[in-house]
Image 1 (cartoon, rainbow, N blue to C red):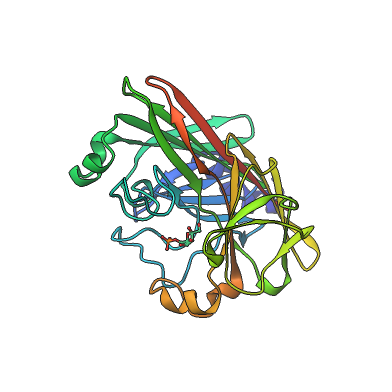
Image 2: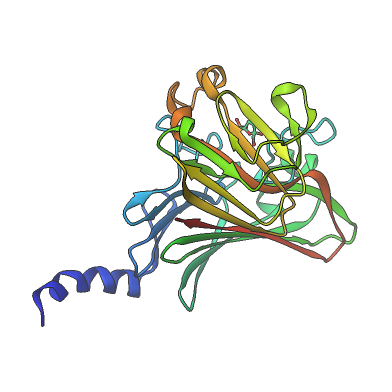
Length: 299
Ligand code: TA6
């Protein structure tokens, strides 16, 4: 047997025989035969790592709190059932999904994809959260890995008789080298709510969105595909399904200093481009199911 095979065989066998396994710190590690990897914490079902060609593609702050006492500052936190805060629904900012312990349902290998599923049901919530959002529901969240892509799909099942409303978002933190060289395309001519300008409604006039200060915008009714470029090179392609809107966020200098779980200079190395349905409430009838998600490609 050629010597290189003796060396590589174990790696291939491990990712082939154990494409997903539980780690010591309550997370699931996925390994694709191509060498791509992803890690998902049970806390918030937060994807905290996605490696392609041995390069980390998701940003997680070096100051992120990983003990389950706060939502993770980085990766892909799952926002549900509210976006931001809501005077009527007494839940913390961005809801309970990103700071709840989800159940690991298991591995689902399908053709070329290595995928795992997590679920969160109303009876897993704290009483205060159930009182704030008194609905019977089940969330199923699938994280799937191929050689160059990461797919994250959320299914919301209304297990009540009555209709309920929610907002949801995949709050993806992308790793980048230099924010001053980043441009986001696919948002031109769209209307956005600018949270940096008192929620002013603005039409995006630029062909590509660049970031040279604090940016916090909710673009509504966004086409399926958006691209993040760096230095004129396409770096990530984001294709969303079932999600209407896209949020672009970078805290810049002052907000970065104001966040205890974020390094003062880390705003240079991350950009959040977040697919979601947040501009309007999603209405889901009793017994009905809603599905939304994204496929991110490392280019
Ligand atoms: O998605 C953008 C945003 O809503 C910003 O307004 C900013 O607050 C960010 O989320 C982070 O929110 P967090 O609750 O994680 O500090």
